[in-house]
Length: 324
Image (cartoon, rainbow, N blue to C red; front, top):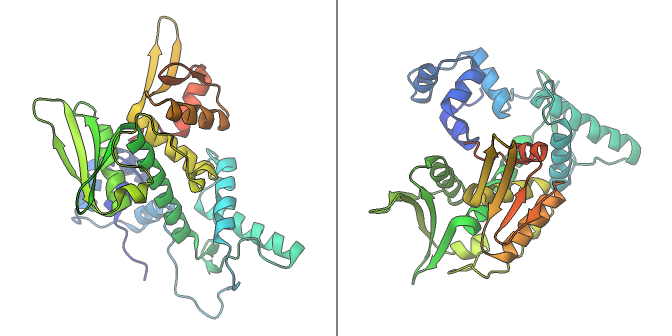
């Protein structure tokens, strides 16, 4: 029997609002609230839509008729590369859901096997109702999400965070505006996901500032960011981020959420999406990454700016800027 879906946990993990998820499941927001509180069960049709939306596979109990292809050495690193390439090529296509991705992975693996007598990714497939399903899919995607969350948190900390050194531990503090609780909630979620611990959120007295704070051992080491001021820090992007387009996008999102702005001036139809920071090394890094993603940017004294109307919208959508 498949485990029950924790709708609230999945919604928060995917940074969805209740209104958005309710619309996707064909429910009203009050009904979704009842489901999240355990006051109402998901109907089978609603559960199927939720599984499809979140990419949660419902496996059946294997039988002798199940199709199994076991390969001793799995190549999960290659699997991640192939999956990211597929997602990039199929993004926005209405008929490409989880079932289609599973089938594409299956045919890619076995087409490669027919040509070279070995599987490209070394995945183990089981036969489900809608076709072959790679057992490793959910686990690997969750690992990729964690990598993405960590890359985003590093970006947010470099943009608007501070790591303090204490005798027995470190503390991380990210500062936001009480009038912009979207960012505060976003930062709180990132910290909780990465450290598996809820941070303390508080308002600074006689100020509009909100702080997200956590105390933990080796925060500086885990994030790869030194204690203290970063005004002149020449930050070197880790290879696990620089070699992954997905992680670069997540890293940029963290930076832009902390220190980015989107401006539109109707009289002149001027569009601007920019990242502002006084650290010249960080500005140069952001400019390089933005250009590597295919966008034209202009670097000024304290900011990196994208100004072409179409590219502003494309970059905004790519990094999901302010999409809380």
